[in-house]
Amino acid sequence: MWMILSSSPQTPQIHDSITPLRRGYNLQVKSTRTRITFPFNFKLKCHQQSSLKPKTQDDGIPIEDVKTLAKFKSRHNYIRVLEVSRKADHPFRGSRLLLLDTPGNIHSISFLFKTLTDTYFDVFATLPPIIPPGPIAVLGFGAGSTAHIILELYPDAVVHGWELDPSVIEVAREYFNLAKLERENQHKLFVYVGNALTATLEGGFSGIFVDLFSKGSLIPELQEPATWEKLRTCLKKGGRIMVNVGGSCVEAENKFRDGKVVMEETLKAMKMVFGEKLFVLRLGNRGDDSSLALTGDFPKSDSWKNALPSSLRCYVDLWTPYSGI
Image: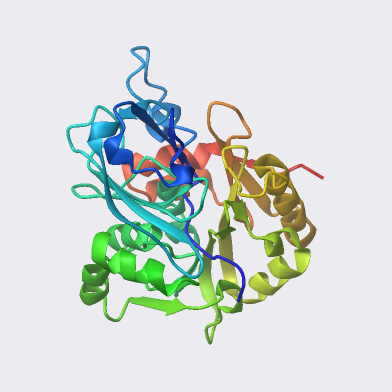
């Protein structure tokens, strides 16, 4: 299997302002500021705060506040695990970050003392109340950010995750508490190493999260309607798919794989399969920074909000029908 299937938080990026991380320099030895960005700050967008302009995810982190815990090349990925100091003046303080490609896109994030991340993983966590009971698939498991949030917020959930690179799962168990999560959820969390697009389960999935990136870009299969037709057949009646479709924030290894263009091609392929039952949530300072997609009839907003923790209700009103074709 040639593709890299991995979890990619709207693919924020890490850059050293003098020597880019993509060239393999050790972040710990540079006395400059490292720019670690998700392309949006959810709290500000959702709660409409901020006349005081607090630090956001676009602000730099002093290099001395970032520690490299692991760095190596696997068969599929250039794997790096970074830890941001709890003393850092930044929304990522106290977090661990998983990078999997040469440009340095972040694929997973976890915090030691909190569940929610103020990233698109929190939007993923709004799906369970609007799907029927049953197993949930995570296609592009990464270090398990999605599974961790879902199992923490919804104790009855059952999660099946697919990740192509066994080295990513090993790193997740060592640095992102996946081993503990598996022990505590032996009958509710199942992790498979393999091609996520072959994922199946007898009886189907109630919900499917799609978070599949290769070399800093959505995998090409997601721009093909046949892929979405196949995934639709994997759903139970009333099931839904929620997708990280990336955007202009994504930096691909191939300069011809423009993030915004690939995002729109993916949405158009989904539109051909799901028709009017396709909705988009666009994020970031610019409308095309990063987007998520949701399939199915749009739920009743009040009922959806009432079923969510208060900190997640703001995302419901950000969805709009997709009209790109």
